[in-house]
Image 1 (cartoon, helix red, strand yellow):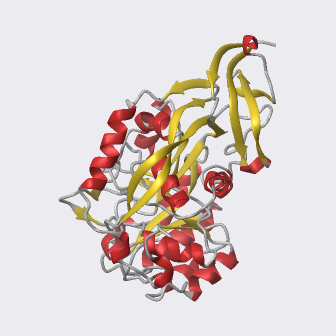
Image 2 (cartoon, rainbow, N blue to C red; image 1 turned 45 degrees about the horizontal axis):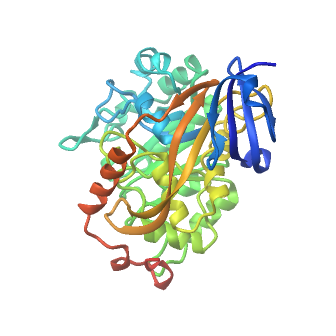
Image 3 (spheres, one colour; image 1 turned 90 degrees about the vertical axis):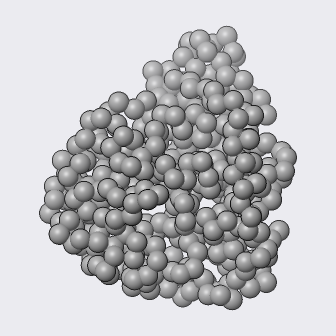
Length: 412
């Protein structure tokens, strides 16, 4: 049999399938055709040498903003895909019922990479987010119309994976908990999970968390004070433990202001690792501090999360969260989405959303991805990416050791 594409010689890590071994992966017709210890190179039209690399199912970014050109914060998913190892971007509520059709027609259907989405409870989506403009889409409850949200979710069922609400002082103004309740009602009616953003109170985390159901997603789960999931001592707040026990999904959603190293370390020490790692990449964090999925994943590794669990949180777990079991794993006859990654050794300074720094001795980088069995190399010049990464760290001056939630969260 002659294959279209063969990824050869790599260490295949597929947490969903329980595989961590040297395996070759062959694809034909956009599907996985063979996974074997040794597939002869002359059996394929194109061969990718993955020697020394990690081969994994294509990464899934559960929280991104890729309504490029249609919103002020959107980035171009196609430009990020190969260099970030990401084959599926889930847009987290950039569009609401009023502009979802435009998002689908002008971005999703024209993109090479797969894009799915949460529909925002706000009819207008996220329309006022920029460095000089901040108008929360849930600050006017007239825009939060659950009937329109449900209608949009049903009309675009092929690409809608849930309902999104951004609650908090920035996103909701004086609306309090009302947007969350409206979004929950819409999600229930549509039979979909809710992704809940929290920024600064009101409402507080303690109001939002008890409302979330099994399978709902708390994004920004390691956000900084205020609305942090831990006390000043570093102890995890009881409502976070109850939410985890109830089956609420914890998602990083790094972004511009929602990931704190000290909080993350405290949560990991207490055994509450994130279920999902996502970037919350948008125009105002794509050049730091979030950058992309691989930077976010590398930060969790630097904090002590094992490689296999980091990969699980970027493949199997987000696929389960959006009820797309055909994604996030590699199986014969399954979708031919593959990421080829390397662990680069060196000295790397990571920066979180509040400016704290963390030095690590390795980070993940991408050689390229296969999307539907078609190879897409990472053509970003390596030295340019390294310089961009290091320049951001150099211009940030807060040391993680200067901020703490108790002795367990000092710098490593």
